[in-house]
Image (cartoon, rainbow, N blue to C red; front, side, top):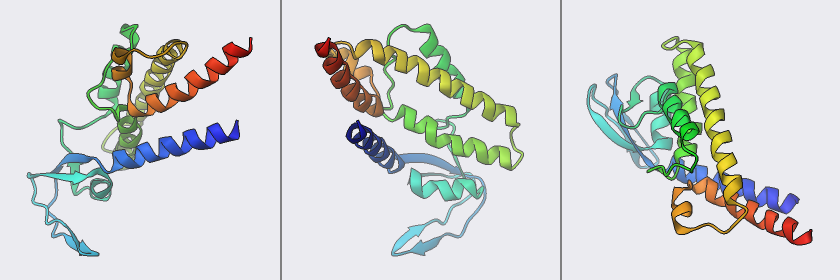
Amino acid sequence: MELIKESFSNSLIRLNFIFLNEIVVTECIKNFEGFSLLGKSFGPFEEGKKYKLKLFSAIPFIEKGILQVALTAKCDNIDVQRYAIEERDDSMLIKRSNKFFLNKIREFKRFMENEITKNHKPKIDLDRYHSYTSNIIDSRLFKLLKLSMAELSLEDESRLTNSEKVLYKNLYKLIKIWRGFF
């Protein structure tokens, strides 16, 4: 069982690493001269302009109040609430355009925490973020468990996020072994 746990955990970590290397659209909220590090330049950033950066590169600038995630790419408690309601109201797994949907929710939580630390948002928003995230995870997990009792159709597979595909593969194998035993 330990081998499955390690392999599964490593797969989730790799998927999150891939997500952190995805491009995110940001908007500058405070001018910044920029700097170079190991031959790579970051900035200058001009207030009001939009910039495309890899998420891992944008995170420090967002946390320092220089950049913010553009409205088209944001994921706050209101967005997570909308996703949770959609999942609750649909008995099928909802196909998300972003296959890193769950990773986005996980990573963008840090921006919500940062906003609360700076007193830009009330703490209740973070509590709601956690609650809605739990609802999404539980709802999608329940639907995925139902699917894992059989082989996926191409349509069902297209509805899964990348991390859910990894989970499905492991669940399907375990359930198949368990069912076969009995």
